[in-house]
Length: 244
Image 1 (tube, one colour):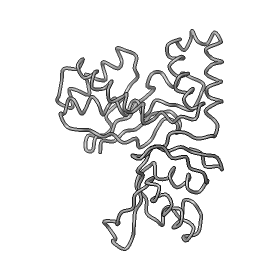
Image 2 (spheres, one colour):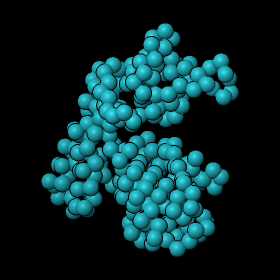
Image 3 (cartoon, one colour):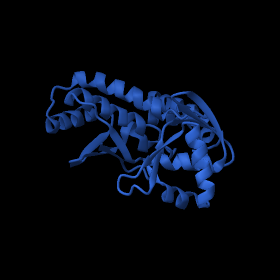
Image 4 (cartoon, helix red, strand yellow):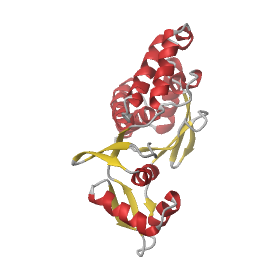
C-alpha cells in the first residue's frame, strides 16, 4: 500500500473514498492484518497519541474503520477496517507489469508457458493501473472453488484434502499440505508455478484463499473463512492459510 504522500482509494458501503495523507494510509495498511489497539497503532506509526486520535476520528467519520471496546480491557479500544483498499498512485506495479511484458516478448515465454504469462500479465496490469484486485480475486476464487467442488467426491476432511492434493498435482495447479487440523492450517507451495517466474512480487494468494473458502464452504455445508497468515511475498517458499 502507498505509505508515501500519494493518494489511495478505498471502497466502503457508501461508495469510494480517495484518501490523502501518509499517516492515515499507514494506519489503514496496518489494520489489513487484523484489529489493533490504540497503543499498537501509535507504536506502529511513531506519532504522538494526540495526532493518532485525530486521524482515527477522521477515519471513523469517513466510515473507513470501526471502533470497539477491547473485550479483555474495557478501558481500551480496538480498531478494525470497514473498507477495502482498491488503488494507489505508487510503484512498483508499473515495473512488474513492464517486466512481465518483457518476458512475453522474449523466448522465455516458451519456458514459462504462454497462458501462465498472460494470466500474470493481467494481474500485474491491474497493479500498474493502481487497482488492488485482491478482494475481487478472492471473490472469483470462491466462485471457482464452489464450481471445482463438483469434481470432488469426498466430504470428510481427510479424504477431501487427499483428493484435492491429487487433483492439484494432476492439473499442474501446485502443491499444498495440511500443517495443522485444529484450527485448520494449510501451506500452499508454488501455486500456478509462481516460483518459476523471475518477478518476486506474487499476486495470486487472495485467489487461492478464495478457492479454499469456496470448496470448503460447499463440501462442509458451512460458511468457511480462510485467513492469510503468511503469503508468498515473504520469500515465496509457501503461503499459509488458517481457517477462522
